[in-house]
Image (cartoon, rainbow, N blue to C red):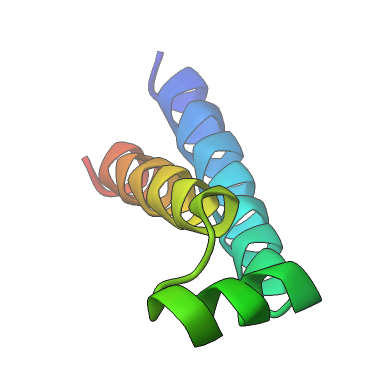
Length: 66
């Protein structure tokens, strides 16, 4: 049972880090840079990837440390 929780935690952590990396890549794209220039904020796609990546990483760490 504990092994299964650890595996779930590791999987969530890996997915979270991947989503955060994808979010950083999306925020560095030309479209996002133009959006930041005119709106002062990155585009919605980058923000969603950051949010989901942060949540997944947090839950993964919680599962590993619990």
